Length: 320
Picture 1 (cartoon, rainbow, N blue to C red):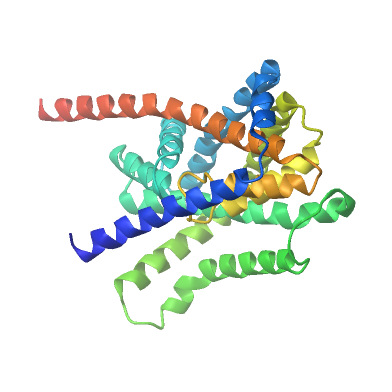
Picture 2: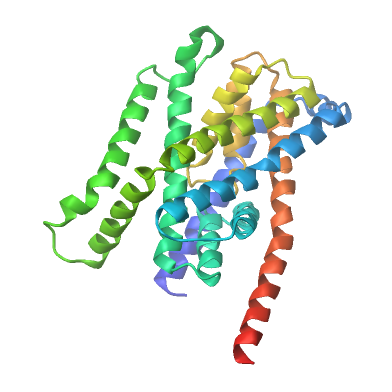
């Protein structure tokens, strides 16, 4: 086994260990009979409503991707973008990398006729837009009604987080200007091309549509979580879910666990506990949330088979 494979295996094992450790932290003080009762008394109409709400995630994801791709001069059928996004969601549930599903999207778009660089840049910039709007939401929500939230950590963390995100975005937008003074290294050229495409995407006429759709996507997830919480009888309102689920999503982007499992459970148990939610109820919500997204994502597996058959048919036609 060469060094690269050894490092990859070690990193995967480390993520498995972190996932297990976080899950242990989440369940170590759980009353398991009460946790079991949470699932026995689920209100199924609310759960079905939540699943329907979560079905909008890949639809809006595909639309965001199309907006970015179009601003960069590329094109993809709306149905293909949704299907590829959905497939990426499915792979994100099992791959040990947070960006694994995005890599699958890049490959599928490339196989569909989009250039490799355009595929990669469109996926990266769509993710950047989602991350920036998520940070803005997390930072600004407490200022709308500070008494509703009990945000962990120092109050200075959140303004600094926003400042860091804005500085990182600004650096991305001007990177190609700065890199002109450096040698023509391959990595410099790649970053410069991404920087140029970032300005095209974010300063395009459709840029405001992308930003609005990103915020709507975050709110949609919170609404789905509201229905999910209602199915378990949790006494939280929509602003609570908007803030805390956004914060949990932000924490879950850390590439430390598999599919976000463990980190999500620990974060929700900790954060919901600050709102007076019992640990077993918070854990039941987190597990149900993870399973709901996984179930919705698994529809993408059917898309994988459809994509493979279409690609095989395309190859056969080309040979004929």
